Length: 245
Image (cartoon, rainbow, N blue to C red; front, side):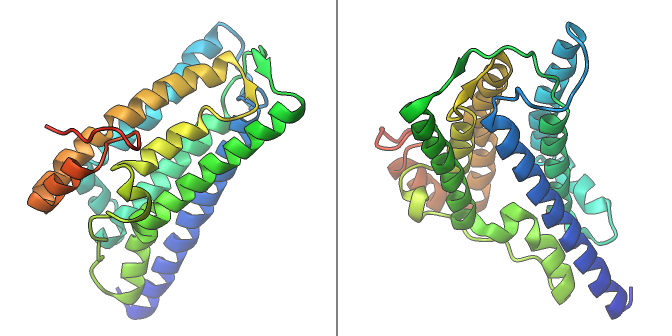
């Protein structure tokens, strides 16, 4: 691959990665705010239950698989350059999220709608949850989490440089602030529906369980450093006793 072609390819994947990332985040913010009551899926009930269940399941299953050794090998083989693996991961995750929220088929049932002061308090809580998610992404390594690491390494014609073990900022309070703040975004909207509750329960369970695999990988990478981090830092809830196996 010539230098000019490499640069153009890297820039293309950069635009694709961050464009899809922005689309997915925008769709998630919008549709969660309304408790998935305003999504665009149109499958009639009871078939919508199965369709929505598939949307709920596809994200954690594929997202987790691509973090395994086999999944990372597949990402590296997609091409056109193995350095784009992290960008491919972000692209796939963004498509998964965008599909989930854009094509959810709403039940049409509103369980609770905040009003008056409570509405504004819930809006503030929702905005805060997204703020915490953004901050935790920045503190864990924005290039890695956003997919920039891959295409930027290709642009510079260098190997990707992965960030070190994050231990500052929100990581002083808990070991998994990205998963914890992501879970908060599922519960702080001013509109509650059966749709939102089903998604929130399942994905919150995923947010609690999935990092255990990540921590096993970090134990292999960082050894005693990560063990010390585990010993002094709670897993998911701040100011609780830090425990690990």
